[in-house]
Each structure stands twice: as structure tokens, then as C-alpha cells.
Amino acid sequence: MTSDFSSTQDKRQQLKDLLYQRAYSRQPGSSAASSAIEISGGGNKTPLFCVHGGGAGLNSYKRLASYLGGDRRIFGLQTVGATADDPVIRNISALATMHLTALRACRIQGPYMLCGHSMGAIVALEMAQQLTRDRQQVELLVIIDQPGPDIDLSFKDWLYWQWAAISHLTWRQRNQYLINSLRYRLASSQRVPAFARRLFFSKSTNQEHLTGRGRSAAEYRRRMTDASIEALKNYRAEPYPAPMALFRAESSAPRLHADSMGGWGRISRQQIQVFEIPGHHMNIFQPPHVSVFGEKLKSCLDRCTNVA
Image (cartoon, rainbow, N blue to C red; front, side, top):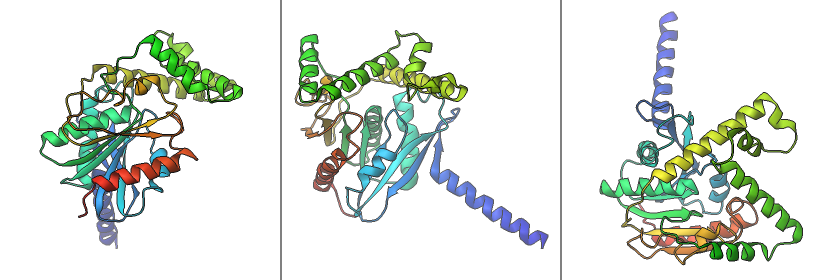
């Protein structure tokens, strides 16, 4: 009886180890890992791998997946176990390599489709670069509401776009828009003292930030934001040879609308498909905007995809 029990325990441990290896891909010397989570299954079209944005969550893609049909497998690439001091989190190339290990555990050979929102778009770009250098086919890279590196935006252009962005809003919505924009600027600016930025990262205006739990969560968000900003500043994008599509929010940052290609014109060696979607950077994945976003993305993916 004891021998049978031990054998069963060994098999369970082996299965657990196998599942862990398939689910998590960790960089040597790093506490961070990548988890490939299947969001939507079924179908024989080229699967889509989605890189999370700065919020490090996949819920946005889960909402979007319901509008992409059931004929394509959709995976989310999730960073787990990350700390702001981890060198991988401060390096776009290292992040991309970590996510690619998880991607290849699901699909060893191409073709691939990749997408990323916000900072995740830059990580997805570097993943696509590494795949193409490895002679793997990337059918499409989707950039979601992230400006390219060759934006040239004057202060006059910035003021004009801010006026255009709020002119169609009600007075109440304008106030909220300005408050949220100011709060984000103060929270993400490294010129603001750390203790003050921690307060802006608190989710509510009540006394949550006075509790130990609220303080630690706000401090974690502040430090991770610093790490993300450092990673983006140090990354230098190279020309990209494969197809690319840009989905940008109509009321998003003025830098994204400073030119017709959203700042990606000199990066892409092919003509970029540009799609305008309703909403702003933070609500394009939410109703009612997500339905329009999903329909346009599905059409774009279907035009570029292969069938296995």
C-alpha cells in the first residue's frame, strides 16, 4: 500500500513539474517568469499571442477575445513573480526573450501573430524582431495604442491635440479627463518625490493609502512604473521587415496622432495598416468601444492569416 501511494505521489509530482515547465519560463538569475495562458481555444488559423501592458494583466485581452471568433487560438503572455529590482523587468530585450520561451512551449514553429498594448507593444516588437532573426515567420505584429520612436511633436501640436481631444466632451467629462491626465503625469514623473507619487498610485481618494496594505501596493506600482520607464528609455528599435498594424485610440495621447503612421513610419519596412478605434488609452478594451475594436482587429487578422 505504501509503495503504491509513493508511486502515485511521484507521478503527480512529475505531472506537476511538467505542467510548470510548460506554463512558466524563467530567465536564469531572475525572479520573473512568463506564463502562456490560453484565453480562447479552437480553430486552425495562426494563433495570436498577446503581451500585457504596464498593468501586467490579461483581463483586457479576455474581453477582446470574445469578438475575435472561435477559429483562432489566443494566448496571453503574463509576467509572474516580478519585482522592480529584477534586471529582466528593466530590459526590453530580456523581457522579449523570456516571453518567447513561453511562446515556443505552446508553438515551436511559426507562423506567429503577436500583439501588445502600451509598453507591451514594444515588447511584442522586440519578440517579433528576435523571431524574424531566427528565420521564423511573423504574419502580423499588432501595435495597440503605443507611439513609435520617430514622433516629432511640437508644443503647439500638443496643445492643439489636447483641445481637440476634450472639445467633444461634456464639462463634467472634461474635468475628469484633465484630473486623470494630471494624476497620471504626477504619478509617472520621476521628478516628483517618491512618497508623493505613491499617493497618486492609490486607487481611491479615501484613506486606503494610509493602511499598510494600500501603501505597499502603491509603492509596488510606483517602482514597477519606474522600471518600465527605464526599460523604454534604454530600448532602441531597429527597422522591422514584416507586416505591422497600428490600432490607435481616437482620444489617445497626441504623440500617437502627430503623423499618419503614429511614429512607426521609419521602423516598418512595409506599409503600416492604421486603424482608428473609439475611446482613449485606458478604455478601448471596455464596452462599448471593445466591440468596434474587436471587429476591426478580427478583420485585420483574417486578411493576414494562414490556415494550418
